Length: 500
Image 1 (tube, rainbow, N blue to C red):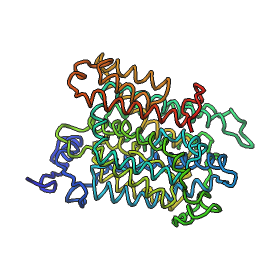
Image 2 (cartoon, rainbow, N blue to C red; image 1 turned 60 degrees about the vertical axis):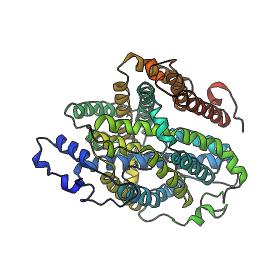
Image 3 (cartoon, helix red, strand yellow; image 1 turned 180 degrees about the vertical axis):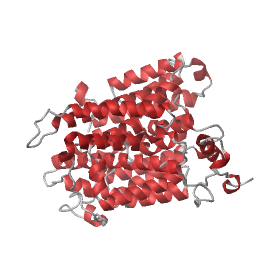
Image 4 (cartoon, rainbow, N blue to C red; image 1 turned 90 degrees about the vertical axis):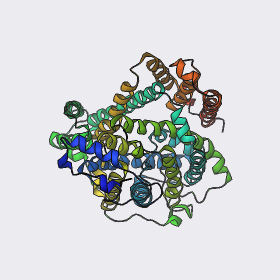
């Protein structure tokens, strides 16, 4: 059997760039848990810069949101804890150096290119304040998530759950997550524009700037889709949004406060006392008990998250590229280790598959390793330089990058998956349930109903075994319902108090 290096052909031998990229995907043979080298097992292409830049912008936004949520929640939950913006930036930079080097550059770039990058668990961000107020400890939570994730990956539970999720359920989940995520980013831009204020600018007088940025983004994104260059959407739209905001007179709102240098990388500083770092010390048994329901919930949400990212590869890659598709169980293994190691060295991220990297990479028809190495180097450079973080988290840049790089492609992929009426039925139930409760419960309930022929394709249900039809879906549904009720996710909407 010929190697990748022997099968590789220069781009000049193909009629189009797209055909060259398709051929690259078809001839790659990435090794699992063995050394993969540039030139021998994969190549760097300029398209790799797109997901690398997109992932960098996305993860800075995610990490900063996570750490500020922890800072606010823990400060409110504990009398002796006082954490602020400086703490959040410092912890974000810790996450962007050690875990990035180990689990982005080394793990997904060189050791196992079948595992997608371990990034951030976006759907958990709104819950972090509740996690802190429930008495959970970030390190206890990380250990539990890591252990549960490893158990699921060892027994191949992740890939089995993906296979049990039909196109209708997956499509509905993508549509809902894409739609709600888009609305969130649009509202953030609107609030940013209306909130611009200085000694010469009256609050509300520059609200039009948000509308202009969004309008230009729609036009530019549509044009890029028309010419089959959607993989350029994140850098192009983010740069244009930045220029419009600066030219439009909002430059006074962009402030550079992050200093160049390395953050404190000593774990003892972060977890060694109640007077510095996280100001929590090491976790005790009570912390583990309070963290357990949230850990179960986080791991339960991995499968639909991973599924959405793999679907983007399947939809954009040509045939005969199964060897370069992300392996759900390997990704789960890396996420589990990264969760424990990243938090142990001082971080506070809740990990999942890196969507702001995978979605643009799939659209650009690129495999995992090349972009992973470039992204890792970019993220580490930004963490050390400091100043680029201030630009990346500025609302016009951050929100537009997330809109065109994650949420709009999710809507498009979801719509493409529900063309048949049976798929549309399952998708509709999934979207409705997510609106009533949340995406996790929606996925679990829709999967159970679909696999038992109560909605969606009845012929598909007949082909499933009793375990796949009833035992696994019902167990997942019970676990998700129990976790949601235990942590009080329905308290705000339905007055159901948490059980802990």
